[in-house]
Length: 279
Length: 278
Image (cartoon, rainbow over all chains, first blue to last red; front, side, top):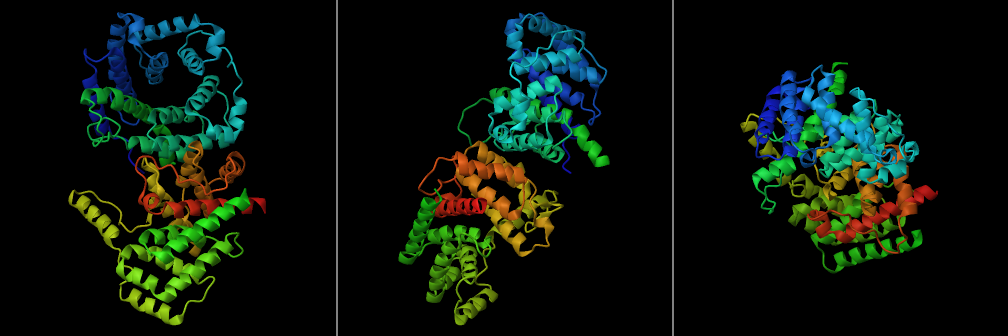
C-alpha cells in the first residue's frame, strides 16, 4: 500500500503553509493556510500537536473578528468545518466559535426559499446544527432522491450539479444507493485524472460518509496523496508552461487550494484505510 | 445507421489497403495494425468476418510477395503490426510454407524482434533510480504486486491512445491465456469509459466499451449505459467515428494512423451494435 503521508512529510507541508500565514497575504488565503494546517495537525494518523491547531485557529479568528466581514471573503462552510474538525478531537477556539455564530446569524436571516434552493447553504446549516446552533434546515427545494436512481443521468451530470446533489444528501443524511456511489467514485477518479482536484476532493469527502466504493476511494486518496511535492505543497505545476506566473501567485492560486483539498481528504479518509489494513 | 457505417468502414479499409499496395509505408501498416488488434479479439462468427477476410486476402498477398519480410527485416517498428496481421491472416488463408519457414529463420536469428530500445530505456531508468537508492519493479513486469502494471496508469492525469493500445495487448494475452485471472484489469478502463462518456467522446466510448466487453470487465450496468448512449444518443452519421479527443498533445497513433484508428473504433461500434441487436 502506498504510504499516504508520514508525520515528517506532514511537517514539511506545515512549514510551507506556515510561510503563507503572514500579514502580506490576503485574509482569505491566510484562512485557507490555517485551515489546511489544522487538517494536518488534527489528522489522527499523524500524531501531531492538535492543541496547536486550536491555538492557530484562535489567533487568526480573533484577528478576523476585528475586520469588516464583507472584506474577508471567507467561505462560511469552511469556517464551520474548521470548528467541527476541532470539536471532533475535543479542541475548540472561542473566536472561531464566534465566527461560526456570526455565520449562523447571517444565514438565519436569509429567506427560507433561497436556502432551500442552495444546497451548499443547506450543508452549512446542517454542519452548524452539529456544532449545536439551533437553526432550521428547510427541505431542499427540488426533491433530489430520484437523481441518484437514474444512473445514466448521474454519470453525465455536470460537476456543479453533482456537488449540489451530494451537499443536499449529506445535509439530510440521506441514503445513496451503492450503485450510485460506485458511479460517483468512478466520476471522481475520472475528474482527478483531469486534475480537477477541488471537485474530486469534495466528492470524495462526501462519499466518505457512506460505506461503499471503498476500493475506488482508496485510489482517489492515493492519487491525491501522490500530488505532494518534495517542498510540501501539493500539485505539480508544468515547468515548461509559458505563463509568467510569479511563484508567490502560483503558491496562492494553484498550490494552496490543492494542498488544502489534499490534506482535508487525508484527514477525512485515511481512518478507513487503516481499519482495512488492520483487518 | 448500421448499413451506412458498414459502407464507410468497407471504404476506409479499401483506402488503406490501396495505400499499402501503391506505396507501402509504416503509417499504412500502423493503420492496418490497429484494426488487426481489434480483429484479434473477434471469435468465429463475428459480424466483422467480411472485413477480416478482406484484410487477410491483402495480407497474404503481401506475405507472398515478400513485402512483409522486407519491412520486418529493415524496420523493427513494423514487426509488431506486421506479425500480428500475418498471424491473423492464417485464420482465413493458408500462407505458403516456404514463406513461413523463411520468417521462422529470420525470427529465430533475432532479426525480427529486435525493438529493444523501449525496454532498454526502462531498464536504464530503473538503474538510474537504483543508483539513487530507490527500488522499483522490473521494467518487463506485467504484474506488479497484485495489480496489472498498466492499471497504475490510473494515477496519471492523462489519457491517450497508448492506454487503449496497452489494453488491447492485455485483452489478447487474456484471451490466449484464459486461466490467467491476474490479467483481468481493475477499473482503470471503467474510469476511462466514464471520462469518455462525460466528454461525449464517441470514439473512445465505442472502443473502451468494446474492450470491456471482450475482457468481461467493468460493471455490466456501466457497459450497458455506454452501449445505450452509443446506439440511442449519438446523432446518426453515415461516416466513420471521428478521432478521439486527445487535447493539445495527440499520441503518435493519432498523428500517424488517423484513418486506421477511426476505422478500428467504427468497427468496434459495428460489433457492439450487432451483438446488441442479436
